[in-house]
Length: 113
Ligand code: AMP
Image (cartoon, rainbow, N blue to C red; front, side, top):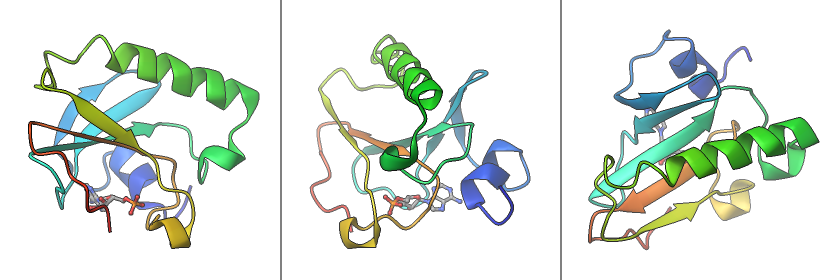
């Protein structure tokens, strides 16, 4: 989608530190980390938040989360991690492209905004 910063990152128009990529998702480092490890899982298809998902997008997101669960060691998340997705300005969502925060590394961010 035009003017979506995460779509631009997915298309390679804006630089990012990519940790993992496949046909459905991109995982990047958050530019303003709130935990020792702060990653963002971005579904490649644009939709604003979890309430706007189609059934097909929900299935894709579930596949992405399942794949993430196989990458815990590789991502350095063995000590545990949190998954957070903010919906709406009052919940501190600042980018209107669904994203899952992955917070870990023995200093779990409890301040998300
Ligand atoms: P939220 O506030 O839940 O919408 O989260 C948006 C997140 O995107 C924040 O944690 C930002 O630090 C992060 N962010 C914004 N722009 C970029 C970028 N260009 N590269 C990586 N992370 C970004």
